[in-house]
Length: 215
Image (cartoon, rainbow, N blue to C red; front, side, top):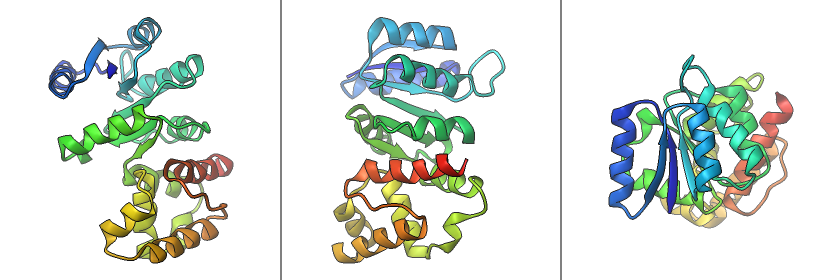
């Protein structure tokens, strides 16, 4: 798998390059700014990209805006955003574009290398990998608090849905039956006014489409 990285922190980008190289991935390019990232995507057509939200010159939202530009130029480009922050407006636009191959992880919450690599491979395969905290913040900021109507268990199910897990995987993690998960999923979509879909990342995109409508 060929990867392009957009990260201005030299130590972090070097660490990612070493990590990915040791796990059978090839880092085609490392860019420290928007122009370098976009040029690398055009040149290498990578299987996946890893993008920091904040890049030079202002270190505000250049990275995620560059990811949006890259996705418009290359609609099937897999993008895994890796950041310390949740940029609501751009994150919602990126995540609710109607296509898979999207991830948004918070740096401080990535605790295991295997989980990070699993998320990267899931995104490269066209799936979705979202930190539950990202979904929680986006839902809360979209207007009022739509998740307030969910029970504790329904919030747990929603968080696992956001990570891309199917019903069977959610049941295994929560130590409940598949039927119980199916009921919780139905309740989540009913309370959020969404139509239930059966597959993992399509359900997450439906939740994010809800955010786009509210925005």
